[in-house]
Length: 138
Image 1 (spheres, rainbow, N blue to C red):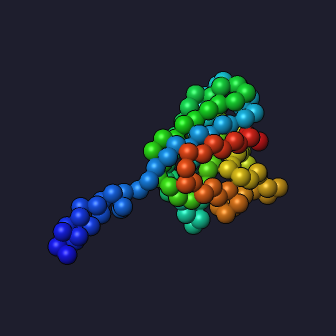
Image 2 (image 1 turned 45 degrees about the horizontal axis):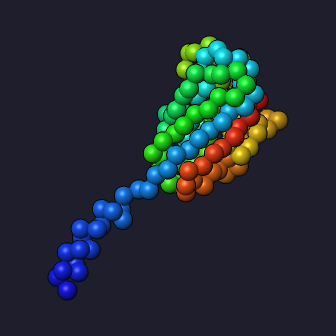
Image 3 (image 1 turned 90 degrees about the vertical axis):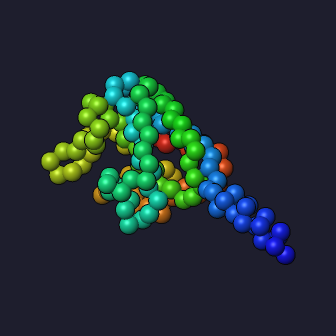
């Protein structure tokens, strides 16, 4: 009995460690090679699109046409992605005086609505293995 308990305790870290995989993001309709493509991953509905609550970010130099980003060692889970083309390289989504984005953006599994961004649940991606997501900028 003691040996079974010993082996169970030793194997516990293996079972508690988070499984990870790679998320590849292909961003289409990149209008120029100016600036960077920035990706923000969110894990919770209540913090979706709030920059101070981003779970993880990645960026890559913009490539006209299609830009590829690799997010390695991402723990399995549910995520919503928001992406924008930071054309002027200032690390923020530029908006006009009433808050409408002036730089192209996109979302996982959803598109912009007439009066704003899609919700967290509309953008949700269930991530359990190496995955490819294709997003078109608007």
